[in-house]
Every structure is written in structure tokens, then in C-alpha cells.
Length: 171
Image 1: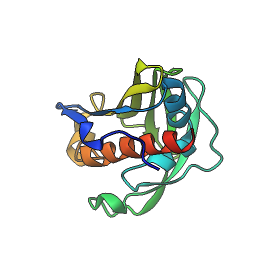
Image 2 (image 1 turned 60 degrees about the vertical axis):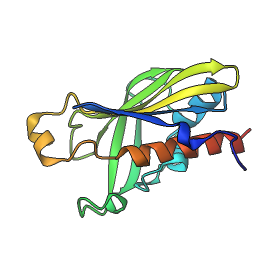
Image 3 (image 1 turned 30 degrees about the vertical axis):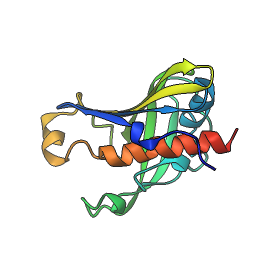
């Protein structure tokens, strides 16, 4: 099913500590938020190929909520990390407006980067969606060890394309 939008209408912005990719999605902010605030929705829309499953996930509702994610680093082709698990913690949530989380694990505290979605209604059935990664709070040690952004704009853009498809399919 086509979502009726043009994926070429995607824009991206890269600074020294933030990558954001934006496109319009033909759905209300509430419908979009229902997908991006559910860890299983993250797996459904993942454009990187890294998100495998969100075991025992439930929709996120407040700052401090956590969700586990089974990951596979191989699709990035950068670090031979293979399969691993992360534990993400919600750091910001405003229903139908924004959700943001940091990435850590049972063994490692978050290193300072966050991912998120910012939603701006354009009308009753259209939303400007920005998918972002911000690493401004990452220490110099981790900035030197990891190439930033971890997920490139092309994969974040693909996530937005898949998001448009998922909300269209669920309507």
C-alpha cells in the first residue's frame, strides 16, 4: 500500500553533534506517536537493519520508562559487534509531540547520546516528523572511539519512509 507521499521530500541536517532527518507523514501526530512510543514500532520502522526485536515491550508513557532491544550491528558494516542487547531509557516524552531516549545496557551506563522523534502537526492528517540523534553530551573519550553519527542519514530517512508506510497500513 502506498502512503501517498513522496520520499524525496526528506531533508536532513548535520551539525557537529546532531543529525536530524525530517519528512511529512500523512497521518495525525497521535497516530505517529502511537508507533514511535512503542518499542515494537521502532522495530517495524527501523531503516538501519540494526533493531531485531523489542522483547517484552510495552508502549512508553513517562520519563524513566525503559525498554530492551535486541540489536545487530552488522548492517552498519563498521564495528564487528554482532548481536547484542541495549537498555534504553526515556529521557523526554510529550504525548503526540516528542519522545527521546538514551542508549545503555545492563553492563554499561549510557554514554550520552540520545535518539528521538519530534512531531509537528501540519493538519489533522499530516505531521512533520523529525528523527534525530544528538551526541552533544558524549565525552571526548567516546567521541574518539565511535564515529558519529552512528546511524547515517540515509538509514534514518528510510526509517521515516517506513513510518509513513506503517501508519498508512494501520489506518
